[in-house]
Length: 116
Picture 1 (cartoon, rainbow, N blue to C red):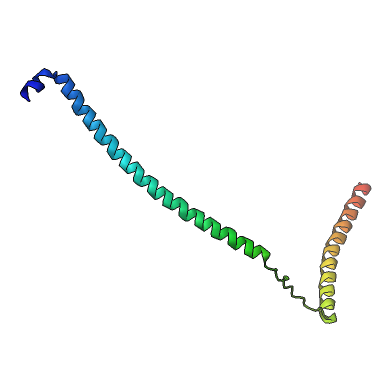
Picture 2 (tube, rainbow, N blue to C red; picture 1 turned 90 degrees about the horizontal axis):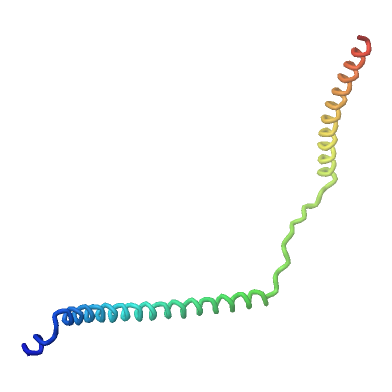
């Protein structure tokens, strides 16, 4: 055996050692990738199953008749309508009286401007 080792140059032995280390690293990486692939496949399968369940749920929900929306109608008595009308009238009177006051002031300014 010593004879064979002496016949192989030291650089070739170094290459064998480096190649062996690279081969070990490659095999380790391959094992890791295979494990990740298995985990990914499990995740994909679980997600496809959930998507299928959701699609089924959507289809069954769309096929069910929808109830009509509930709308509450409060009947307006004449008293309520009268109150609403009275409040609206007061609001309009308040706004109108301020406009009338502005017009009166403007007329006075115009009259005093004519006198000057």
